[in-house]
Length: 81
Image 1 (spheres, rainbow, N blue to C red):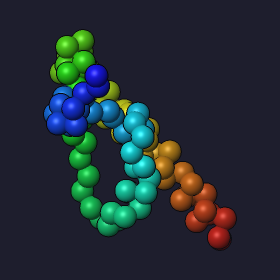
Image 2 (cartoon, helix red, strand yellow; image 1 turned 90 degrees about the vertical axis):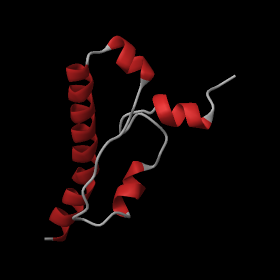
Image 3 (cartoon, one colour; image 1 turned 135 degrees about the vertical axis):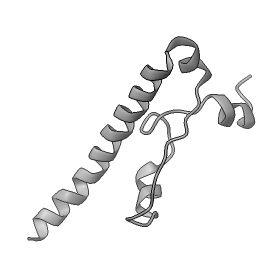
């Protein structure tokens, strides 16, 4: 048996780009000046990685995903000029 939705939400979330959630569509629906945060508790990562490494991984993964998500928008804007 898999995890219950509650257990998955509390302790088994994935970082941006690791799961199936359509984050690009979610980001498109958010106001451009909105403040975003990542909340991705992971019992596996907590067990295997120290706090500093988990923070670094969350930052680098989110930054990489945001940069990749921004690239098509930048290319589209550049093509219009």
